Amino acid sequence: MAYVISDDCIMCGACAEGCPAGCISEGDGKYVIDADACLDCGACEGTCPVGAPSQA
Ligand code: SF4
Ligand code: SF4
Image 1: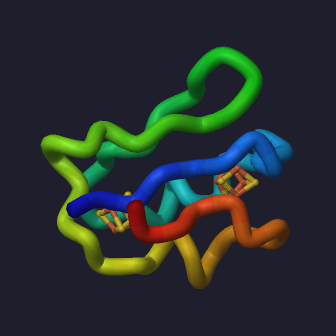
Image 2: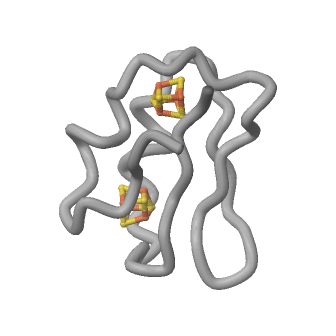
């Protein structure tokens, strides 16, 4: 499993800075998670101001 970022993302970049795997990058209109590299740690979910990341 991996976390995914919904369209609620406001592209603040906080999750990418805090991700221990460095697997979050800027995508088209929202940030995206590389599912193969995601450690499923949940840090992004706790960091995001709008609750966009969630477990897939
Ligand atoms: Fe990165 Fe952890 Fe979020 Fe996966 S769950 S994208 S490893 S912060
Ligand atoms: Fe988007 Fe939330 Fe990540 Fe900010 S912390 S870039 S709003 S998913």
